[in-house]
Image (tube, one colour):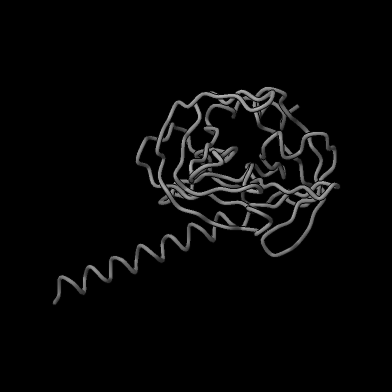
Length: 205
């Protein structure tokens, strides 16, 4: 019928849009590797070549290897890192002038559809889907305090840390994927809006 044909057409349009969003985001999501072989993720957030990641990903390192989706590899230098908030910035001269991801200027809400991107277990540019399943979560892991974190249903694994949590429809960055509960598929993401003043200060100074 005409109605079912239209519904099918709408589904095709939606899947194409989703593929476009994923492709756009994947282009500037990176895998970060330390000299000891440990891995994490990050994403380009400005045109200065600055990549946001988790502090625990680059802890103890000054220089790191940054690998792009197309396997191009650059050297990056940690220019800012916090002892309390699990956030750091890596400057990658090879990415200067490249189009960064757009950052959301507002808090995400429960039920918002999201994509989590990163390199779980070293599988670069893996995408998982889910929703914001909780907000305002507070906990500590080691020296890091996670305040007002998003709880997400999208599965994440070691290596996802530092990758972006993005709005499924717009591709805007909502948060930094940072931690998970061992049992089940509960992940946590640091709201980008909560850490931008700190991140921008590192980038400008």
